[in-house]
Amino acid sequence: MSRFQQIVAMVFVLSLLGRVLGFVRNLFVSSTYGTSIEASAYYAAVVIPMTLWIIFPTVVNSLYIPTMKGLMTAGEEQRGHDLYSKLFTLTILIGGGVSLFGWLLNGPVTNLLVPGFSAAGQQLVATQLGWMWPSVLFIALLSLWSSLLNARDRFFASSLSTVVNAAVTILCFYLLVPMLGSTGLAIATTIGFALAAATLLPSVLSMGMPFRLNFRWRGDPLLHSMGERFIPILFALILGQITVFFEKMIGSGLGEAKISALAYAMTIVQLPMMVVGAATVPLFPLLSEYVKQQNLQEMNRVLTLGLRYLLVLLVPISVGFFLLGKPLIEMLYQNNNFGPEDTALTYWALIFYGIGLFAIAARDLFTRAFYALENTRTPVIFAAVNVALFISLGLLLVPWLDHGGIALAMSLSAFLNIALLAVALRRRVGPFLSSDLFKTAGKTTMAVLVMTAAVMLLKYLVPLPYAWLRFFLYTGSGALVYACILYLVKEPLLAEILGKVWKKAARRGQ
Image (tube, rainbow, N blue to C red):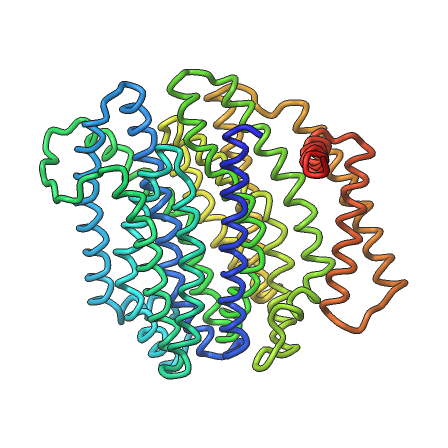
């Protein structure tokens, strides 16, 4: 196994563990509060730090990694140290400033976030959010230190920090919520981010990076170049994430239970999306290297391979959410204060979120490709189109589909976004949607259709009383049928995976 494959495998495993722990975190909330106002208040408030946790690392990665790769290629390590000290200073100022101003404007932010909540509900959100604002500083530090390590192809610590964040948050939930009630959820969230940032410190210190404040920004060409790209990248990401805030705004007028139902459904969707997406994180430094080398042919090959893996892995999961989403939700969440009505609300959202699984992951892959090309203008334009379409579709579909309309609007807008990005990317790097991609798409579609028929037949012939038994038996059977069909049609990606597993097992048996 190559070093790159080992890195991907490591990131994949740690990301999977992090997402599993994220599930446990949500299981605690669902078991304790169900879809009550306390749960909805928590999920409304936590959207701000969680959104920043997406925005900050992506911005810093997109600015720092290409710049640092250029310095490393030129052998200018000292300039890299100087650049880091300046970015460390900016990170402290920006992260601390957002935390402070967010705390000072906590009330107006809450009113804007959940305008449809009752006065009591808004007060709960304000209390939760007030305790979460300090986490912004820790998220900013996490972003800088993760980018610093990733630029040097050191992915273990940054991946581990995600696991630490979830594990610490869960532990603090169990310690604080019995004493402080739902406020303990917010305090635990901030502690989780603080200790996750601390996890990266030993690795950063081992690199000898300076931790001094450096205000000598004027006249620095590297900072100037990064600054020119900062606003477009930030604006694109804000546009990409603003749909989450509109989701809360629209959903708050449908009843307070709908916010938590959407959150529980999105958590399930994010498990495969984040795990598969995290496995593509090492692709960004690789794409940046190919751009620096002007090797667009190899860049196109990596893009096509990434899309093929997304098709094979995510399309059957999307269909699986429709076929087996209800027993999955019952198995995961239905306990104590989470009842059958809560399951029905969550399943309705899950169906429509699942439709956009591939599109959301592909959109992130295309956006990373543009950032590797140091093209920030195109993602901004298409992100704005995406927001406009999401809002329009949401307002159109909600009267017909209730909160499911919000989920479907997000999925449909993501498909339009990847279509626009693909056309623009093709103009920049040439054709990358090769015949291999279309062959994989056709084989995947065939395998999914057979899998769907097999699962529906099995559900009809073998009805089972327990949700966990239904889910595991039907899912296992469907996955086996899906893999067999891909094997029979000779999909090379599956053959490659099976070959590696067989060789590894054979070596262990010797």
